[in-house]
Image (cartoon, rainbow, N blue to C red; front, side, top):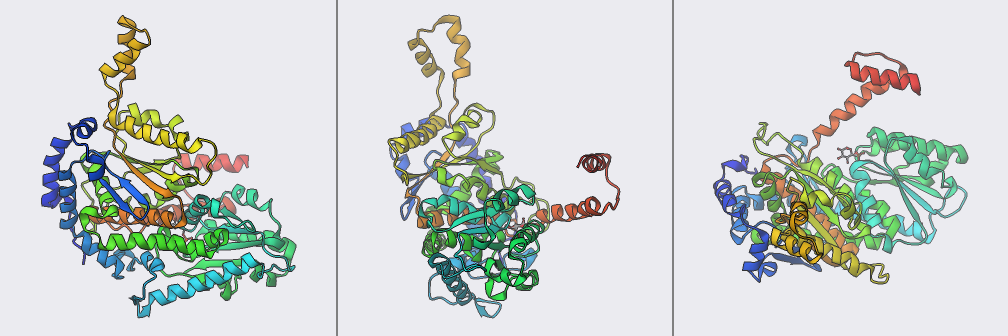
Length: 548
Ligand SMILES: O=P(O)(O)OC[C@H]1O[C@H](O)[C@H](O)[C@@H](O)[C@@H]1O
């Protein structure tokens, strides 16, 4: 059993509260000035990626107290419980074993009487064979043509992960297959993809853990209708539709052949399912070997997470930093800023991962927490984001910790673009840290020939407080391996935060409510069944029915 009490009751928490009062007034600019080794002290490495925590509002003592907090909340024990398959997803009575999907060791891992690792490997072989058949052209459609397009139909965890990875690793894309994603139940999503494609050369991957998600089933039915409109014979479905699911019964009921089902297990959470059969579209886009490299990258982070001491453990430290800002500085948001166009979907992916996992207010005893949990995660790729919301990060009234992420080497070495891109990354983190004080602004304005009242009036607007925390993550190159490792780092950071907050990170009951409510109103819209609502909801329904 995991420790089950409020983090605020720990010794470390009390010490952190006192410690906060000594750190809060300190300016990062001074911390750097006083310690030439700050970068070395607070930079952690794994493989070819560095995690520079030095521009955070921490001292050595902060990390020591935060790791004490991790120890008091028994984070190590929690990590072991997860890896060994304990049913730590208690509200759904499930193990949490996405790590088993990228475990290439010879270990045995018994789950419900089966060796999970062996089952994983069987499905991986099935995926490899399938991807190879697509790429060699051995897999043909109902008119004997090879497939040219693959469409992944899924939503949430059955969409965001593979879509983000396919985009991030576009440079590794195989030239013979184009991969598309349809997720939104808005018919526009399907319409905009399907009109470009030919049913004879299109293969659909229906990705749904439960195979009951309304959006996905609706899109899958639309795709099936579109396909049969040309192919006519339902027998042809088996050459054009495959499924990724834990619910094989529903898959076959839909009309997809059992041999075309790639299964996974209920011990894989939706938002952690990228590494399972849900990653099939990644194998289709890049070739299965590249998907395996992604898994191996994640495995290397898993090993680090499981074995490294708390004070050097990257996901633990990243999770603790988030606790520091959320619960002591009172930060309510966290920005993810990839300085790499290929990583532009990472913020969206991490939104589901972090906010669906830790957007909870009930602790593991069933009581309402009396401390803040998950902050809002948001972000966008640099440098575009500099021209939209950076103003607020620099001079707004709220403190926003940011993760800057970039590769040292670009996949597209065009002129000096990459140096320019990275100079923005470095300059922004430096400016956020240092700020600009009155003396500096005065000097700058004086140099421009400004003086007197004119200067004094402008000066306050050009001040930057600085002291804005950033974490810089740099990798040598954005390879499948490094990406796998980075994503696994964020997964484990998410888990660590949940353990400290004493909440269940692996369920998502909040999402269920929306599904139920939409179901009721759908009946009214489609079948004219009336039921009572508040005046706003009724008014909106009337507006819709009167204007459609
Ligand atoms: O894969 P599916 O069963 O279709 O579920 C898709 C998504 O549904 C809901 O939004 C859940 O909260 C997500 O965690 C899940 O990823």
